[in-house]
Image (cartoon, rainbow, N blue to C red; front, top):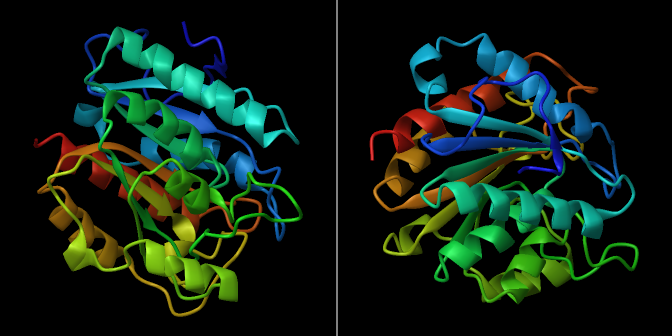
Length: 267
C-alpha cells in the first residue's frame, strides 16, 4: 500500500488509515514553477510548524502517508502517482478526508481526480491570488498556472476566491467559473484548495508569485467556517516556499491546516 510515498518527518506515526479520519499527503514538487522555485520543501516546513502547535488531540485522528516521490521535471507522472496513492488510501477507508501539502498548485489536480471517483458531483473552491486558468504555459498543459483550467476541463465546478491578477485569457475565461462566495452551492461536496499566496505578502511572504493587496488569516478563517456548513471532502495547502521565508509563511500554513482539521472534526 502507498507504494508512491516515503514516510519521513511525519505529523502522526499511525501505521494504517483504516480507522482514522484524515490523511496527510506531502507533494514535494515544483518543476513547473516559472518564477521562484522551492515549493518542493513546503510539506516538510508545514509539518515542522504544525508539530510545534498544541495539536496532540487531533493528531490521533491523522494518518500521515508521507511524501509522494515525485518525478522531477514530469508533472504528468507525478500527478499520476498522487492520484494512485489517494485511490489506494480510499480502498482502505472511503470516509477518509485527504489533505495535500504542497508543493506547487498543480498537485491539486491529482487529488481531485481521485476524489471525483468517490464524489461524482464534486466542486473545487480555490483560495488564490491567481486564476490559474491559462490553457498552456510554455506549451505545457500541466502547470501551476493551468490547474483550475484542467479541473474545469473535467466538468468540475470551479470557484476562485481572492484572484487579483490575471492574463487577458484568464479574465475572459473566468466568466465560465464562479468568483462569488455567496453563489457557492453548499449542497455539493467541496474540495478546498488554499494557495498560500491568497494571503497578503505581509502575512505570507514565502511564495513564488506574491501579489500585493491580499487577504489575511481572519478572512480565511471566516470563509472556512461558512464553507464548513457544507460537506468538505478534501483540502490542500499549496505553494509554501521556505527557501524564500521559513518562519511566517509555514506558520500560517500550519495554523490553517489545524483550523481545517479542527473544523472538519466537528462534523
